[in-house]
Image (cartoon, rainbow, N blue to C red):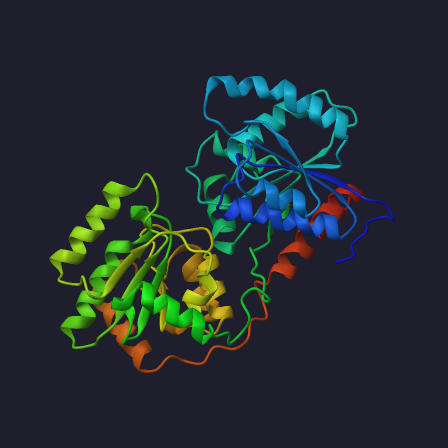
Length: 379
């Protein structure tokens, strides 16, 4: 990617709470990488985390400041961040979360020259003055049409539609190649680790260990399929995580109550998500509350794997566009098992991805940066 604006390089500072994991954090790294590849200077300010090493290895600079910690002491980072910005003299400060947005907004006061302020709304945040900081950007990025509609509905007096740009997250089609299948050695090792998953179609629900992800609905689905004499297996991929032991035990109790011990695995996070998806007959997205986007939907479809999900929020938006056969009404167990049975019998063909690609997201974001720096008026 060789994007240069007005024959000059830009300095862009992104503000996030930390760099551990999550959609906003992944997007931060992806844009940082694109900036460096395009010859620009990329800086990220956060409390740090396991992704810092990757960020720096890819050519960006990291400044450690706890700008996302919900404590009174965080106010003292305003002056520290102002000094960092005064030293860096960035063209753009891009806030990707609410508290870092407030800290960044206050830090920009009095800076001359004043950097441009850009924001991204990544989630369906609770409406209110605290969340409204993310609408103060000269340009406001949202990750789906669902989120654009949400912002305009809840903040009709705070933002005009012209300042909002819909830039969906994108997936790396080289990391998730169309039609990919895991090799025999990986498959053999997977089933040796989880022998109860062998011998029947595999359903995968990826997601951290939180009730919002709909793990219980996935377990009930396997039980409901069994009652229809349809044999299937389930892996709750990434649900078994530190600090969520009580919740995971609830899920195990449900598994035992339904007599599904030989059909369900609750696993920790794995680095080989692509292989698990590619092995799956269905990838599930059963969040019981609307989400702003559904990256796992796009990842699975990019691999040519069918997706079954609740048709609300960003997930419903993606399924309506990319795989309508996988949509079911939220919380409707009867429709869920019916559609699962249909897709296990015959899943409609999935074409190679032509949208929601990482390169598209990177290009659109860097183009927006260029418009801001060059003073291109909003439409």
